[in-house]
Amino acid sequence: MRAAILLLLASLSLIACDKPQQQVQEDPEVFVVTVEEQPYKPSRGFNGRIRSSTDVDIMAQITGELIAIHFKEGDNITAGSPLFDIDPAAYRAAAAKAKADLARTQANQANALKNYERGKKLIEDGFISASEFDTLEARHLESAAATQAAEAALESANVDLAYTSIKAPQDGRVGRSNPAIGDIVSPQYGALTSLVGQDGMDVVFQLPEKLLLSLRHNESDITVADINVSLELPDGSLYEETGKVDYFSNRVDPRTGTLETMAHMPNPNDFLRPGMFVKVILQLNHPLKGLMVPQAAVQVDQRGTYVLAVDENNMVVRKNLITGERRGENTLVNSGLDAGTRVIIRGVQQARPGQKVQASVYKPATEASEGENSDQ
Image (cartoon, rainbow, N blue to C red; front, side, top):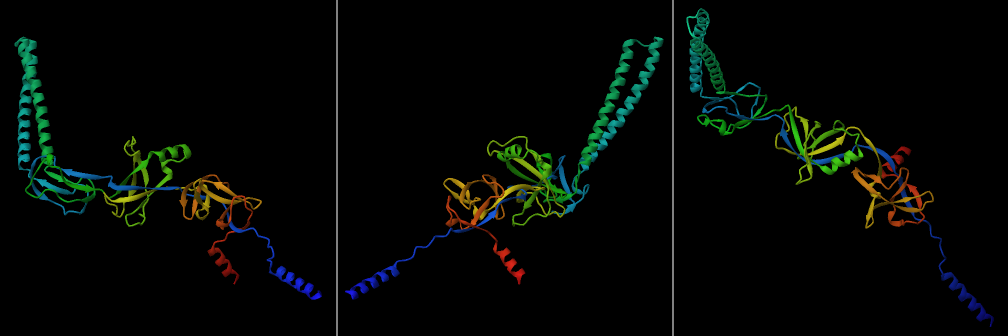
C-alpha cells in the first residue's frame, strides 16, 4: 500500500512539471518621434516652354529682286548690321523723279506767290476786279498744296529707297535665310529670316485656377515678388539662373481651367533657346513654417490618411490627417495633428489604437553610428 501511494505522488509531480508556467505579457515596444514645426519653402512644378522676349521676324517692306545677303546663318550680329539688299535702281529713280517734281512745284509756288502779292496792290488801286484777285489767291494756295504733296512724295520715295537695305533692328542671333539671291521678295513673301535677342528669354506655362484661388484665400500676403522661378532642363539638371513672374493672362482658358503665365529668365550665356521645353519650378524666396511628420509614419486605409500616436499615458491613439506636399522624407500636415505629438515611426505593426505600449525615442541609424564613433 505504501508503495502504491509513493508511485501516485511521483506521477502527480511529473504532471506538475510538464505544465507550462503562465508568463506576464509585456507591452510592445515602439519608437516615436516628436513632430514639430519646421521651416520650408513651398514649391510647385509645371511644364513650360521657352520663347524669346525679343524674337523678331525680318520682312521686306517693298517689292524687288534680292541682290545681296550680308550674314552667315546662325551668326550673332549687332543692331544696325546689314542683312539683305534689294535692287535699289527703280527706287532710286523714283526718288530722283520725286525730287524733280518738288523743285517744279516749288518754282510754281514762288511764281504764284509773286502774282498774289502784286494782285493785292492792284486791287487796292482798282486795276483788277475782285474775281481776278480771287483767282490769283486760289493759284497761290494750290501751288502751296502742290508743294506739300511733292514733299510728301519725295519723303515716301526716300523711305522706299531706304527699305532696299534691310538692317538688324537689335542685337541677336540670326536664323536661316529663306530667300536666295535673285528671288523677288515683297511684304507678302513672309519672313526673310528671324532674329532672336539674347539678353533674356521668357518661359510660358499654365497655372491652374484652383492654385490661384488657394493662394488668394490662404496666403493672401504672398505677392509675385516673393516667388522665385527656377527651371529644370530636359536632362534633369537645374538652370543656374532664376527669374520672376511678370505676366498673367487676363482670362482663364475655359477648355483647360488654366491661366497663361510668363516669367522672364536671364540668358547671359545664350543657353536657353526658343521652343525648348522645361519644367518650371515656383518657390517662395522666404521660408514658411509648417508641421512636418515623417513619411514612414503616415498610413492610409479606407478611412483616409492617418498616423498612430502615443499619448501621455503611453496609449496608442489614431490621428486622422489632411496632408500637403512631401518635403524630402517628411510630409506637410495641414490639419489633424498638433506640435509636440509623439508619432510612432517604428513598430506600427505591433500597435493598435487603445493599446498600451513602451515608447522609445527613435534615433536614425546615422545618428546612432555617429554616437558610437564619438564614444570611441
